[in-house]
Amino acid sequence: MTNIDFTKSEQYTLSIRLSADGFSFSIHHPLNKGDFHFVQYPVNASYSMTANIKKMLQSTEILKLTYQQTNILIDTPRFTPVPFDLFEDEHIEELFYHNFPKNANETILCNILGKSNIALLFGMDKHAHQLLGESFPHARIFACISPLTEHFTQKSREDNHRKLYAHFKQNQMDIIAFDKGKLLLINTFHCKHTSDTIYYLLHVWQQLGFNQENDQLWLAGKIEAKEDLLTELNKFLRKVTLIPMQEPLPFDIQTLMTCE
Image (cartoon, rainbow, N blue to C red; front, side, top):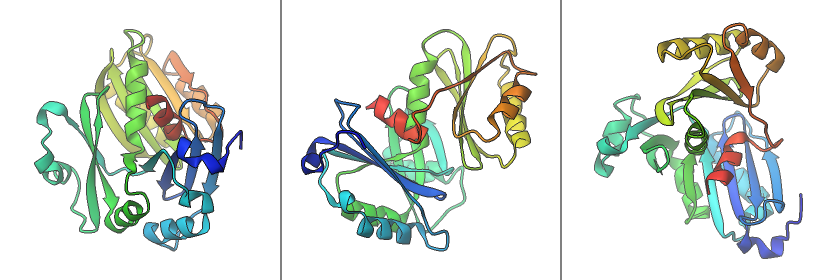
């Protein structure tokens, strides 16, 4: 914890990250990045997400304070991007369930991503959404993939190379690809082993027609067997770069802070 004065919580931003492998939250001053606090909160896998959220809210006093802004990030693979010119508010569920099986206990939400020129639709447990709405009525709710997409969109426009970004978390990898700043692909893959990761990365690379010599692969997040992965990827791709992280803060929360 650095320079956080909880008697002045109304000056700070609270960001809560909810994932099946654990919850976390960060508190920071929007103008002074040195004022920062981060907490990891373990979840009970035998409980529902709503039950875990309720327990966290009841047992964590600093979450009961009033903040200037509250962000809630939901880590979910159930998302779909929709170009602005095809997006209509009244057809959110129809658009979403065109790509996913229907779930009766799900609320469909939308993030408008101005840099990426898309609407990002995602599913959230209905009861969890209701509970969080009661506790944080003015919170902004994001899919974790949303700030990542906005951040990488901005970075992809720094030069004219085609870029593929891979973001790693427990047993999963998000892939976001660009052609000179134009978004080509957003998807999530389940990767339990390094061999799975290499297969999906190279398959997507090939399907998009990326060049092994000139185009770029950027890696972010918590990467298992990092050295083995880099060794194997460098056999096929010339430009592979690790993106530095501010440990232990999850990379999607970092990108949310940069996109504010």
